[in-house]
Length: 119
Image (cartoon, rainbow, N blue to C red):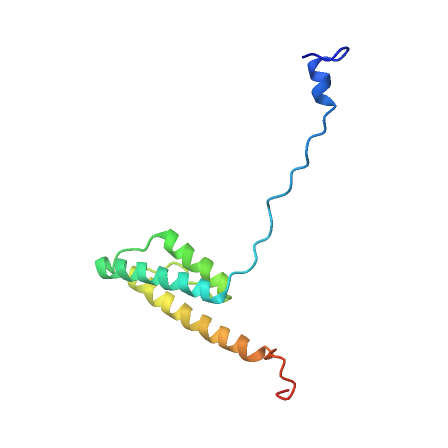
């Protein structure tokens, strides 16, 4: 059904386009336990590769994955080890650094349990 005196392009031009919401929202930081679980999963995968052929050069994507987890944990990453055994040892050391950093942060944070007598 055509509108009198308006062309089809004029009729569509008068409609306002709905505003599109931005989908680019900042992600909240993941919980420490979630990141550690992912690190354990990565460690298991690297252990399997080290047992199959420990002298082979590790995949770059595994090193990038470990470095991304290190950034989330706030510790130094693994870099680019020579072989899977080196990557496995680097992941273990990274986990130790993350645990000590997390323990230090928890010790520095106030208890916050509402107990005034403890303060």
